[in-house]
Length: 246
Image (cartoon, rainbow, N blue to C red; front, side, top):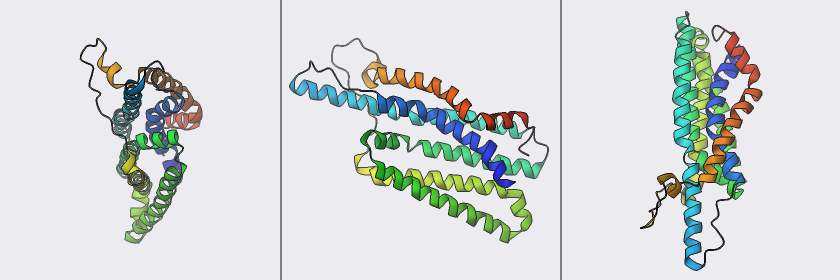
């Protein structure tokens, strides 16, 4: 019963935040080319290539504010949904677990620029190591949390069982993000502003972001909404038709 509660509405919250905030960026940044024109020569060409690469890096770091925005919107929806519940214990358990899931989604979003870098450079080892370790920590944390609640009081296990899954999901996000930053620390490309030329009439966006990639990201993000509705359609229907998380 507890697993069913966590795997429908809470997983839907998590997947909505993660999928919509990163799918468009992953598709655009792994399929587009940000190289500069081949007509440039010598040092000018190298400089333009470095600036073009930096613009794509800047786009990849936009996943973090996008994830933050979606997390805040999802949190508002979750708290509004919980306010209609009439059972205090159930409401507290579900509210707390949902907040932990949403927090976990944002923490996991912090690692998205590094995951995009892994996809671009075919760094399978770093991604597999981080995801494998995070999955192990999540499983162990979930079992230990449930055991601790059961030892404290059997009523505590009934009252806070879904929160245990939220704690496990949070441990997954922290482990994944920490492992990726640890493995990629020396090669992380951080966002930075590109100083404009002395004479130019281009916008701030054009100077600091690769506009074709941004356009692709927008289009892929719109497409991902439809894709998300298809893949999570069963959970969306169950959530919409149920009056509470029971």
